[in-house]
Length: 104
Image (cartoon, rainbow, N blue to C red; front, top):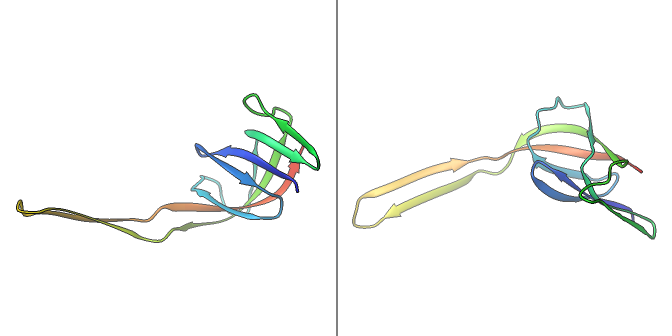
């Protein structure tokens, strides 16, 4: 099982080749290829390569499929006896990536 742990958008993500992943929105046009250089760990077969802090020669190619918004969250706050209420909603923007190739 080949996989890699990457850092993208301030978060760490375990990725495998040929799978889809949703990350925080990136400013890249859908259809373009993204080259990820921040690889913290890479496993190929029985060999595990650790970065200190990242592997310099390893690269991951990912294709940007689409941008979309997540489910709506409703936040409601209330202070009893003070007649104070607030209600707001939030929808996180995501980008869907397809991991095409893990190069080392």
